[in-house]
Image (cartoon, rainbow, N blue to C red; front, side, top):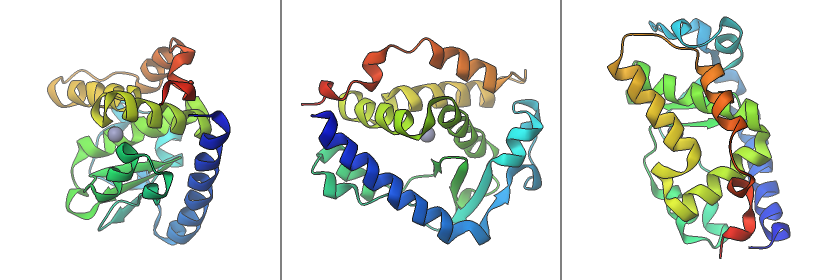
Length: 180
Ligand SMILES: [Zn+2]
């Protein structure tokens, strides 16, 4: 795919996202104020204040069918448990007390902070098209640490782990020409 063509998709998603966040602003709650969770064992206090949660019946996804890319279009039909849009995490209502899904989505907010919107969305899209949703590099990392969170008692510094890994990512993760 040409960079220029992908930039148009990216611009559309960011515009959609901007409207979304304006619309849901009244319903945003800082993670530091929701619980009962022990996420401060994994995330610094300022992160838990800046990441905000919105409880929804269905996680918001942009109109991806319009991209004409099948692997992205199908996501519109999924029943996602949660989805991050920048530092705002949307969580499905039936999962509002499930700590692990919050852990997972806050980790995406950390990735988003490390990468910025363009690089986050680019790596996510390329990874999903080439390797599939679960194995795109952002999800692979989030599910791996979520599994550690769910199975081990020992806390760890998520921001340090995530930023350390992302620093080592190859530029090919962002190379839109890999999509044919
Ligand atoms: Zn995820």
